[in-house]
Length: 173
Image 1: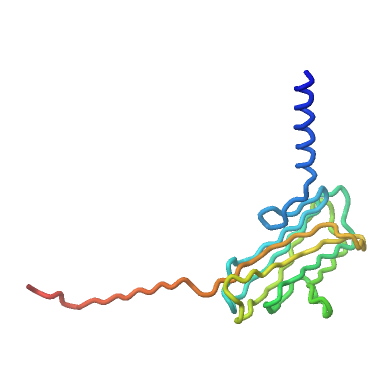
Image 2: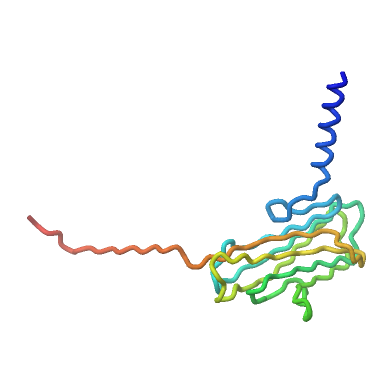
């Protein structure tokens, strides 16, 4: 019985540590706490130099109370140009972060914010364009939730050429 109890204790300890580990940060595994979730996605991946795409930030409130004074901040990578920002978001002149301030997000509600960007024509093949977002509420300076997403730059379109030729009259033997 001691061996069985020891085995059960080991299984419990391993299970406990697996459950409290921090989840990965990507859109494949959105970062969700017990109270809120934040997911970043891109309209294109991979992208070409000088190509435009949209970054989407989805926030959900699964808490039992509203999130007040909500602030979503997105750090965009170097090597891009911001074309447009949705829903009254602004670009901070000092940090270049995109900032959205939301009065309140009710229980069970969600919101979506987007930034349209263009990759610089000088982007290098294989370059990783990483975006990070942070969510804070109630004027807190502590990070409530964060997420990351990376887009890969591809050098050029895969080469494909087709040559078709035909003669109007087939050759007779």
